[in-house]
Each structure stands twice: as C-alpha cells, then as structure tokens.
Image 1 (cartoon, helix red, strand yellow):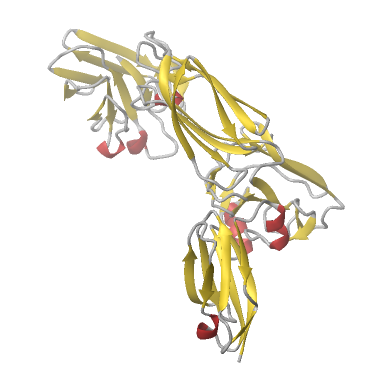
Image 2 (cartoon, rainbow, N blue to C red; image 1 turned 90 degrees about the vertical axis):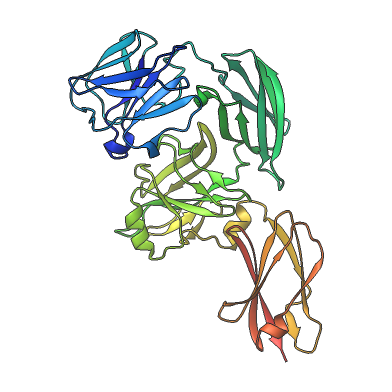
Length: 448
C-alpha cells in the first residue's frame, strides 16, 4: 500500500526531493505497477525488502535497511491540487486520493485508513507516529537529573522488552576522552554519566524506524557549561547588524543543533570548534561586510532585536538554560559591545583576548619556558608543555611569521628544545602554542 508522498519540497528542486513510498507486505508477484491519474503505468520487477521508494534520480535514493528504489520517470507530482494514484501487484491493489499538498510537508498515511496527515517525511523508513505492524525497538522519553557530581539518565524502551544499548559519554567538565560501553537494558533503565557538563549518545540497533533509535545531546548544569556567551553587540554602528558571540571552552567540537536562545530563536545550526567561537546574527552577509575579514565563523538566526537600552538573552541546550547575559544603559555605551564574562567593553568579533580566555574555562595546557632571554652562545631555549591534548608549538619572527614548528605529543611532560638562536635574528621573537582555536603567544628576546 501507499504510505507516504512528498509532492512539494521547498529546500531543493522538485526533481531532487519528490518521492512516493510504498510499503510491501509478505507477498510475492512477478511485477508491480504504479499509475498516476491517466498517465501510463510504471512497471517494476517485484522488489525485495519491505519498502519501495520512487524517486526521479537514483542518487537521491534513501539509505535504509530492507529498501528498494525505483524511478518516477517523467511524472511531475502536482503541488496545488488533489491527485489520484493506483498500485497493483498480482491480485493485491491500492488506490488513494491525495488532498491538496502543503509546501515543505509530506503526506503520511494514518495507519491503514484513507486519512492523510502532514508530516516532515521519513523516506524509506517507518514513521512510528502513524504506521503499525513493523519491527521497532526505540527509546521512549529519556530524562536526565543532576546530583552528586553526575547525571542520572533514565528512560525506557518502546516496541520491545530488551535490547543492547550502546552508550557514548564525554565528561566536558575536565580533560579526557570518550567513554564507550554497551549495556543490556530491559524495559526501564538508568545510566550514570560523570561531570557537570557532559555529552551523551545512546544508540540502539537500527531498525525500520531509526528516528527513535538514538539520542545525541548535551547535559549541562548552569554555571558549568563549556558553551558560553562571550560577547554581545546590542547597538552596533549602522549598518552593522546586532550580533552575539558564543565560545566553546572545551577541547571538543560542540554541535549547535540542540542549542537555542530561549524564547528568541529556534535551534541553531553548525558547530563550534575546540576553543573556538562563532558569531550569531540576523544578517550574516551584512555582518561579514562590516567586519571586513573572513577568518570568523558566522551563522544566521532570527533572535529578534536585542534592545539598545536594556535586555537579556538566555542560552539553552534544549530547554535547559546554560548561560545568560543582561545589560542596561550603563553596561556599555553605544556603539560599543561588551563581554558578559568580564562586563568590560569589548569589540573583538571571533577573537578572544586574555581576559576573555581566562574567564571562560580551563586552558587546555600549561607551559614553562626555561628563559625569555636567549643568547646565541648560551643555553638553548627549552619549553615544557603539560596537557592531555597534542599542542602545536611554533616559533615566530618579529613580524609573527612562522620560522619553525613542532607538535608536542599528548602528556609528554619533558623539556623540548626550541631553536630560537638558530632560526631568529637578534631582537624580538615569539613562541606560539595552540590547541584547536585556543592559542597562547609569549614574546622572547634573542641577544648576541
């Protein structure tokens, strides 16, 4: 039977996004036929698996188990009127009348009735909100409660009584790696995840309805988030648009798909690299033009107007507030922006000064220089770096051009020689250390 149609996509061309989905029962026939209104019927060898999706281009065939794909050919699905479709194979048949489409939405069949509901579409897979009678082992509502330095993550299974659950967790409150585990769960379960800020992924074996097979989210106590608001420009000079800077104070790239300005925007897009930042604005093109350089990550989000004389923003993961900032007419005089971590005037879009870095989290490494004054005939410059990440070490000349580089391995703890006397002339030079987008630069002097 027909289970899903997508006649009017909006994000892509119709040829790329249109599809018809047919659910196949435990049945055998030589051929399967699909007819759209009075046009000649499409003919297919009876497919293997449990679903057949018809698309215009095989490159857009969904990746799903037990799925076959066929070609819609020259059929152009109507997007402004009702339409009729017929399907038959052997002595089995189905016929449907589709209502007028809604742009950007798929039609999903409601169980085995003649009713159709607008949905976001699940091409090639089952939609557990509407379909019945298929294999589905999923995660029901999952909740997380913090206490005693850890998160209690509890939930239960739906559609099955037991399963093997893959658990990936990362404690963002301290340096360390992913913890991987697989546990057997029966109906209800509770997992323990360490850290005030943690990233957790839960994965069940993929089945016909993969939408409820996994969970990927951040768990953050307010005040302990590695993701913070690091700068706000609520009244910039015209024509520069208002913008908010977010900073990731961890050594892991953090997704923004579950992050929003609560009450102001939908979920954001993209991600923030380790020790990096991103600017959020309503008009990314205008902001890029106003800033004048390309080395800044900018994403677009409609967060409304910030207010010149006063206002506030709440940064949330899902609906949990992890950071906030407020201002009034005395906070920063227009057109200056400010850093809500230090409450000082600031205008460094995409870059963090020392005051900002020290206020947003623990540095990813510590280092010690043997000296900052190097003599050509004296002892060489040495450096010791301590941290749980590999550190990029560079020697820069007086114009900050790189003349030597080296990668200090993880947790080395030994002294390394930096060839300052050999690579630099007499005068000023610099030693640069970085992890991700976090960098620390210190000046040195070379003497005869």
